[in-house]
Image 1 (cartoon, rainbow, N blue to C red):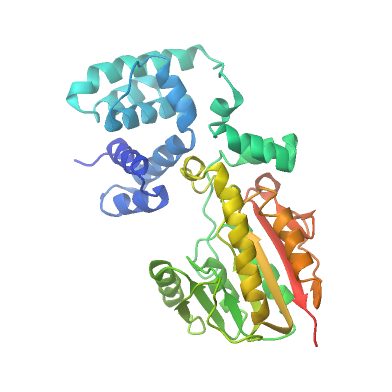
Image 2 (image 1 turned 90 degrees about the horizontal axis):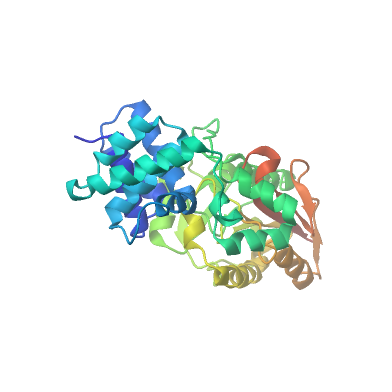
Length: 380
């Protein structure tokens, strides 16, 4: 019999083995037969445990000695999360979680979780350090503190530990308001004409489909076939006939120069502004990824700028908060395209000016963190 806790533990094991939580949880739920209430419990337990994994490991580590096998470790984390963060009554959290563990480990898991319950009930918990309390890698806390300043960084980190609510557009597409704001701002900048738009890194298709509602033609491009297929599937589901999709490398785009009235580079990034929505991403990204991705972002921009027609706009956006991928790329972009381009006004509040562009902090409006900068190519 499939149970909510059992399904969540299965998802946790799969995520530790390398699967993306936002893919494995929906897949397991779709085949589960669980009712709506239990499905919500699975989502909160799986995503929350992944998000607060470091804190849960510290709680369990107070009483469990040695390395636990993956399924037992997943069950222990899930039990600790229920006790410390969901405030599930101890009798329910412990017994129901223990029953999902292999019989050989139930005695140990029962003892550990009962002691975690006692620690939580004796509260308040005294965490060993900031990284454990917030459940982020130390380098993420340090990097955002240096790049945003301590107060803004703490606000962002706290907000990204709150589960994201779903926002459904009028057309039925689920998309974070921060991402919607990028497409809406670009559409506003292009309001003088109905020209064609290129979305260079379009998957899964949220911004491309939104732009297609106000543009005559939007070309959705992505490097990987599977990701391009996502865009095509979403366009088809929404009945958009003006959104053809191509598999194309943005660093070597197969389009004629000056072909598009607008080009959007929603670039691959470290994702450190969207960690509330991608609970396991904080454990996958590495410090060296930031510089590597910033270099890729610049290559993409340099490759596609020539595709913008005179009078057209080039928009760069990322869902991260690091200086290297926001301020530094914006500065490079404005300098590299200084001849024949004009930096445009950024969106207003809750966005805030950030160098030559604008930053949307997660705590500003309860959205993903985003950065955006836009330029217009001057007429010859």
